Length: 470
View 1 (cartoon, rainbow, N blue to C red):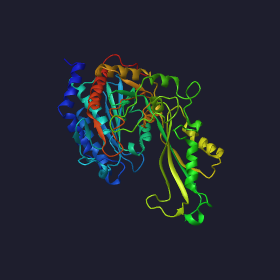
View 2 (spheres, rainbow, N blue to C red):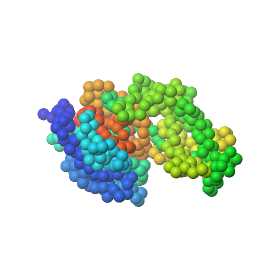
View 3 (tube, helix red, strand yellow):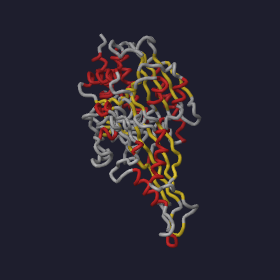
View 4 (cartoon, rainbow, N blue to C red):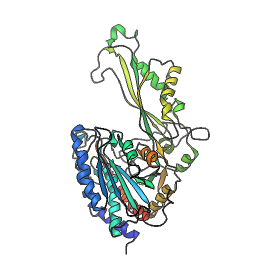
């Protein structure tokens, strides 16, 4: 007789006996980076050769679509409908990766081959996002096997190949396919847990707003001996501009940028409540959490999951690799705000302009301002969020932390805006996985837990007790 415990045992055996490692190795071996033009053919190959046949074996109907925006990777849509009256979960993932950065990996490691080393698997895409969507699909396969091919629910999937280029085309695609993609909830995986050993549910993501700050004073550099001390140095002006935006300890001084959801502004009460006692830990290889950095009075969890951050991603003046004796003609900084839904990015540029002008910094121009990925959030106490938490805690036998949004960016807003679904993100990675640099890896223990957690959720999706539809 098919049982929930039996489904979890099947999933565990698949992991323990090397089945998942073999699967992940096949996926990693396809160099499907969307950030290197020479690997463009691998984007389609990943979907056609690695994913589509697997889904077909599980009974999915599959369609492969060109991206609505020319020059970006294709999008796979798959549906497995047993009865339209049954609950329907929508899966999402991305098979594209960042650039391989082959020459920067440690000796013995390479981006396009899986390397088993201790408690982790190394390879590009192991954590972001091949390993994560593969765990979810492998769990579904285990439940289908236990139930003799029937789930008792419906599953739909969107797998894109341009997430690492800002999910270009995804919004238009989902809008066009809204009827076909109708679902009760999005339940998917990307990003890190709050710490490696604590299973996590995120109900949204922070957005990203970008701009360039530019000080351009002349067409070319001028002799530093003849003009130093007489003519304005654009790098110094830009440095002063940045010092008015953020203080020495990381506090944002442009207060109009900050979340406005609290009783007196700031972190909303519901967000603060769900983050009470929430740890933040990157694990081995992560950056440090510097106690004195950031907004005073907030916990680390509130700073990263309930607040906004300002980051200078790049800054130049002159040619750092080959400096010359000249006062540079210009200086430029590319800046980013990671923001929550409690802020309005449409006001960011005007607020910054007014701030710079008030400080006498009219020479500093704001250029190329744009939102790369909007913020999103489902209420942390939404019935589907609490359903997922209860299912995961039953499967894993311990606490599952809910956070109002993950620290990074994902296209959850697309699914909220066009499908109206609640967001249940269940990350299988951790902050120290090095997902956008060399030596990307997936920790085995969280991966195994993720497989079991999804096996339990797939089983429970086919049982009574799911949240009311609509």
